[in-house]
Image (tube, rainbow, N blue to C red; front, side, top):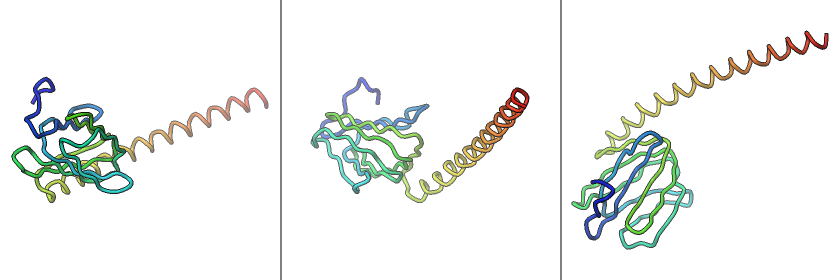
Length: 142
């Protein structure tokens, strides 16, 4: 469904946004998510709403009544009218909770490895810059 097409009556238009892509965009009838103060449910006629999401699994129901899941690594949920946008740095979607668990482990562990390598490279750069600074200091101040 494109953003220009209206959602079916009695539904909301859900968009799950990652930094580099739109992970999901579809009409839904219900969303269950979790914020710091607990789980909440959104239905099409609820008032406009903003929440900071905690890392976890949210569920949403298609207009046909099928339950789907999305794992998010924290994020912001904004409901404005019938539009619901969720912005998160990392996310995966699935129709089966066990399938989603496997996707989470695969993708998030891969990201953890990339982050570990990036932190290691940054530490080497910082150590090299500090050594050069100390060398310059010694050179100019004896």
